[in-house]
Image (cartoon, rainbow, N blue to C red):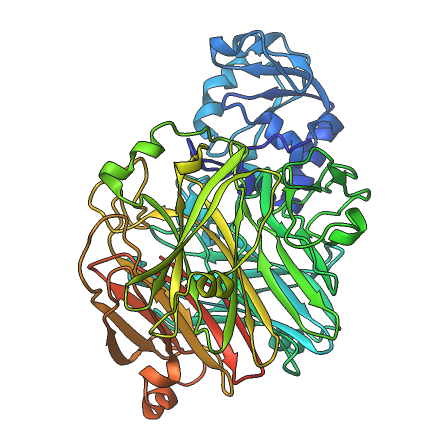
Length: 638
């Protein structure tokens, strides 16, 4: 059963309430408040905003002697809240309660409205007792403002031979922050015990932020740990999402991998978890994102398209990490089968690790599966206006060095089938081939080798690299909802090292709009510009970037793309320009675009901002250690 608290709704947007309740610093404040209420004896609940059930999920009101629940809206009369029939707040004068809890933040006005209704000697309390200090709030005047809770979870591990690093930068100063944001951190071990709390200083506007497990371990004198890192950025403006790249690196070439941030809003469902090959073990890390335990038999996995749900048989403690080994639940499942994750809003987007017999490993993330969509009857007709409409672009890495595989992933409960085709483009923008998946039933998982398709069609990539575009193809029937996703897996031919990434489709580079597309981070659609963050690796690792210029309809013949190299303090060191052809791509390396002098001046902690005001590019980034190892994932923008 899912938590009865709203985390995110595509109709209503983000919820600050669950973040306010789930903040690590809220827990002791809630304990103090409940102690006072318990000491009062009988307690009445006033629930003018319909938040009592959500509060009860985090901090059980049933532990108190609740004698009545009161509401304000007449249309709420007849409802049951906390197992009690609600009463009009105007009947409060007859309560036998010795304390009234107003379930709201910024509650002073609500409290003033009912003070005259309280019997003499009745205490009046509100959720303002749980507030974080004003110094931690961007907008103290509206506590549930999403900007007050720019938070996210990171997976952080430091063990023998394996380390982790979270990398981002202060992008809020560029959005108008008057002071450089600060970062409050809380590190929980695998059992959910606090290992350390501290505030991280960003040294200057635009500076990089790097949280490295080896440095944190040394700073706090820690033993080996597998942990959740709770990050709260203080003083943000406009953008309340904390984005970052997560790198896993080792003491040898067998450990080099990267993935994306966790997405801070726990979901009901996730999908795109791959089954293992014969020589692999797949571990999905469940990071409980709340201060309450996940009850046994509450979350689990099932093969995509199957009702055979197998649940985690143990309780997962508050803020703790649980390694779900796919083979423990489905020992016979094998790639290219894939799983659906029943998450019940208990945890943020989970990462999974694939361990290959012989020592190599890789990390990636699943994606949010939507349960609020329906098949869109207008999508098949969109081609007359929007051409290819929804496009999912992914690289074909240089074929002399990498082998590439693609797999469509059902990613909404409305997707009973997937009518999908793949278009293959050379880096020059020339279409060189097509592949039809047909109309895939939900329970059918296929993975297609791109090399084999090109060879079978006697097609080639004259540039040596290019990209794929997954699009809808209704020629075999089927329906769609616009939430098209896929997983893409790459193998370095020389080493056998593997990386994989997954993402979803959008409408690209057309002035026409459809619903919320082409998506824009900064304003209403259409989004027709690019701002991407590229973190850079330390020597001997080189950084590569694969930029793709997809277009739903005809757009500019070439991009006008600018690369700005910044040092760790946010000072611009050098610039470069790229021109990507329409429907084309470019695969480039840090060492090739910026000379040794610029790279030396940039130093450690450097990053690149990729900017284009003429078109929307999609990008993938990675690190490469010669022919020994590499990592890759999609990029993020802001």
